[in-house]
Length: 367
Ligand SMILES: *Cc1c(COP(=O)(O)O)cnc(C)c1O
Figure (cartoon, rainbow, N blue to C red):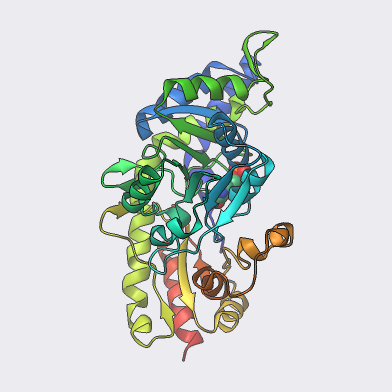
């Protein structure tokens, strides 16, 4: 069984994907081909904010932070329970990541604790919509407005999710996503995008991602090379057409996991993921809390069922951030999550029989 079944997805869209890729090969427009602009147009429509594509989700974060004017001397408040790239890019642009514990409810940053981390150097809050569910933007908007802070969303795992009917990446002034193959909308290599409704920021982002040039060989600012390849845009154009249907399937699979595993939750051995009423999740991951995680994970593995741990070490305890003074016990909710979380196989192409086997094997582990 595959943790994320990209092979079955390819088989289903194979002829469309091959035609799209061949078209790029024949045209030889490998960088900046028409598919890139077409994909950006479709992305913008889907999200409701202008899309600027780039080379990957990590670059998208870096570009968003630079375009927003964040750099040396600034502090950015973020979650310690995320993929490294979120805090890594804050540090990479010369700013300081300030961690704030997460909520027990949804694994996302706990907005009620943010004010205790604000200093005169604080410039922004970078929230992550983890596992496919939007962060608590109602509270985040309140605290960012009250303190005149920029609010950004790292939507690498939540592309397509909604919050009060608005799409993830279209909620905050600036947001980012990733098209890494295993993300909900993935390409066949690296890809990413930044989103904004601010036309000045959009212009700055387009310039920054292409060596700071507005016209060829005129470099207005120092930028980077971070473009989405034409082939990846062509692949994503095909996959975006199937995306709504895939999201429905992911939501159905998540509901089936939750219904089938509810009796085990009642025994207190596991805890199921919850979606807030104002949110729809894209289920980038279906993640349980498990008391005796090693036992369940090795039992599943011995039955050929892959699982994953997102993430086993909170970021304030990562070697690269220890100099910031992180201590064990500092963010108890994030630290407990890192010991308990276990993600089950999840993708739009997970088969019914496969899901049933995962569920049976979990029950078997507790017999
Ligand atoms: C995957 C991911 C990223 C980085 O995306 P890449 O395309 O792999 O660079 C950033 N933030 C989060 C939360 C992610 O899950």
